[in-house]
Length: 333
Ligand code: HEM
Ligand SMILES: CC(C)=CCC/C(C)=C/CC/C(C)=C/COP(=O)(O)OP(=O)(O)O
Image (cartoon, rainbow, N blue to C red):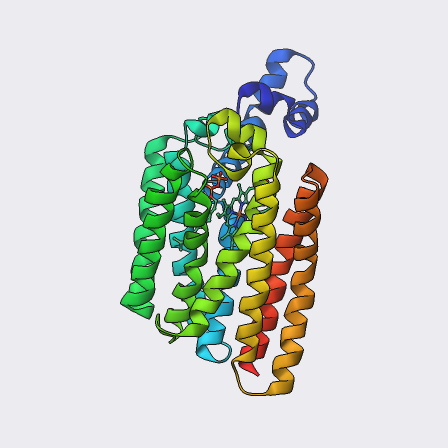
C-alpha cells in the first residue's frame, strides 16, 4: 500500500485528528506511533489477503464441496470429522497450490486483463520468489498429508490433477479453445481424490459418474464467463470459445450440452442404488435442481448477451451444490 493511500485512509486521519496538536511537529510526534502501528496492521492484512487471493479461494472452496460429496458417497455415510478435516486440508492445499502456480505462470499475461491485473503478482504486490516458495510448500505439504492419511491413490490423483492444470491446461489457454476440455478434466478430478480417499476405487462407476457431473458442469459455468470476458480474453491473447467463435452460438450450445449431461449423469447415479421410489424421487429432484441452468443455457444460446450470461453463471454456482446434495442424500439413504 502506498503512503498516499495510507494518508487517505480514514484511520490515519482519525489518528492525526486525535493527536490534537497545535504545531505540525507536535502532531507528528504524538501521532507517529498510532500511524506506524496502523500501517503495520494494514500492510499485514493486505499481505495475508494477497496470499489468500493467490490461491483462488472461491474455486478451492467449491472444489472442497465436491470433495466432501464424493467422499461421503464412497464412505456410504458421514466421514469422521478428524478424517474429513485432514481430507479437506490436504485437498485444499494441493488445489490452492495449483491456483497459485497458475498465477505464477500467467503473471505477465494477467497484466493484460482488467479482471486479473489486480492480482498480487501482476500488480507487483508480491515477489515472484515468495509466490513460488508458497506454491511449493502448499503442494508438497498437501500431497504429503494425502499420502500419509489416505494412501497413494488420492495423493497421486492430486499430483496428476496439479500437473494437468498447471503444466497442460495453463499453456494451452493461449493456443486452442480446446483448453476448456482439459480444464474441465482437471476441475473434475478432485472428486476422484475424495472418492478414493474414503475407500472408493478408481474402477467404480459411481466415482466416474460424479466426475461426469463435475466435468459437464464446467461448460455452462465457463461459457458464461468466457462470454462476459470475451473482449478481455481476446485483447490479452487467450484462445477461448468466445474469441474463436465470437457470435456466442457455440458457447451457448456447449452450455446446453453440459447441462444435459449433468442431468443424465445425475439420473443414472440416483437410479443405481436399490429402491425404485427413492430413485424416481431423487431423479426428479435432480432434474428440477438442474433445470434453472438448462433454461439459462437455452436462453443464452438463443440470444448470447451479458445479462443472460450473468444469469447462467449465477445459476451454475447454485445448481452444482444443489445437485451434489441430492445425489449424496440419495446414495446414503
Ligand atoms: C474449465 C474449467 C474452469 C474455468 C475455465 C473456470 C474459470 C473461472 C473464472 C475465469 C472465474 C472468475 C470469474 C470472475 O472473475 O468473475 C471463475 C470463478 C469461479 N469458479 Fe470457475 N472455472 C472452471 C472450473 C471451475 C471448477 C472446477 C470449480 C469448482 C468446482 C469452479 C468454481 C468457481 C467459483 C466458485 C467461482 C467464483 C465465482 C464468483 O466469484 O462469483 N470453477 N471460474
Ligand atoms: C486438487 C487440485 C490439484 C485441484 C486443482 C483443480 C483446479 C484448480 C481446477 C480449476 C479449474 C479451472 C480450469 C479453473 C480456471 O482457471 P483459469 O486459469 O482459467 O482462471 P483465471 O483466468 O482466473 O486464471
